[in-house]
Amino acid sequence: MVRWRSGTVLAVRRGWRGAVELDVVCDGEPTRALAYPALVGSPEPGDRVLLNVGALVMGLGTGGYALVVALPDRLPADPADDGTTRARGHLVKARYTPLQPILLGVDEEASPHRAVMEAAESLDGMPVVTADLHSALPAILAGIHADRPGARVAYVMTDGGALPAWFSRTLDGLAGHLVGTVTTGQAFGGDLEASTVHTGLLAARHVLGADVTIVAQGPGNLGTGTTWGFSGVALGEAVNAIAVLGGRPVGSLRISDADGRDRHRGVSHHSLTAYGKIALTSADLPVPEGLPADLAASLEPLRERHRIIGVPVDGLDEALRASPVPLSTMGRKLDQDHVYFLAAAAAGRHAAALLASR
Image 1 (cartoon, rainbow, N blue to C red):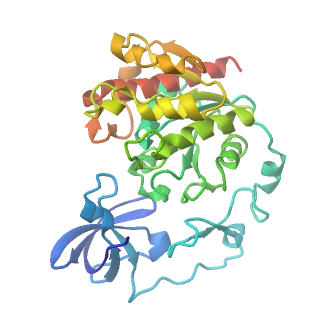
Image 2 (cartoon, rainbow, N blue to C red; image 1 turned 180 degrees about the vertical axis):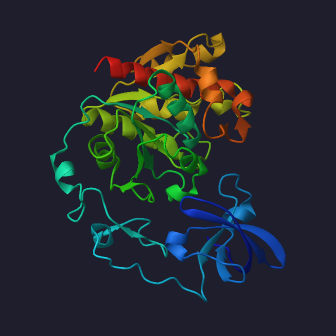
Image 3 (tube, one colour; image 1 turned 30 degrees about the horizontal axis):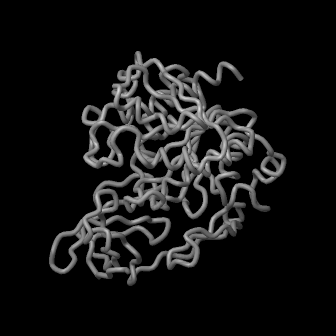
């Protein structure tokens, strides 16, 4: 349940798109906190803040902040009805929670994209790369742009991890490298808001004009260590959605030779379950050429349903090192889990190659 605290803002620290980091004194101790100004207003030194400290108390690596729930003594003004279509949105996300935002859906009646979305029925063969973790996003993008620097790449963010896209410093750093972000399901804060992965994919193709789209959850990942108990099961459903809409599914496999947990060594059980048991249609599963024999052997359960495709890796290391944002997964940097990032970049390279055949 929620662990509530009251604190006082000492200082406003760094900020990025949609979020601001704070120094707060709470229970007499300095505390790192995060606020989303669009939800709670803009905190200033001296403000009293109502905090949810659950993630901080648990020591979560991704979500290790005290989260600002409200500025109880200085509430923000109601959103202005400035006559724009955005002010007339009625798409509710994080539904029935105390901080549910009301947003303009890309396909609802007031949207300027309504006619386009009503007419959109197909992805027109667009390659769509699916990934388990948010950390794969910049590596996939690096692989795409290594061979097709002019490719228009969109990101469809699902709701398995962080719900606010604003939490992601990766997205902030990729501004100008992506044509836009579509937040789907209960996730919010993207350039476009969609109700489902299906409408999110169609918006990426027909509103953002993407050549390639990447689908992955936001930062954070829920996992219980059981076969079915992890948020990445949504990958398999995304593969199904891509196929139904006439796209070309490309799976970025979660591969590691550095993870200390046996279930994530080689091809992670997350990938084996999502692609091997949930995805009902065939996908391209690119792998870097030259994988060690033990890692290559862990692919066997996926060969019956999917196309395992070896991808040359020349130039991919350089592309990864040139990423505009730092590469990190589960606290491991590029050189600490090189094969993980290389596999994601290989998926991006394969998606770029598919553009030439369209």
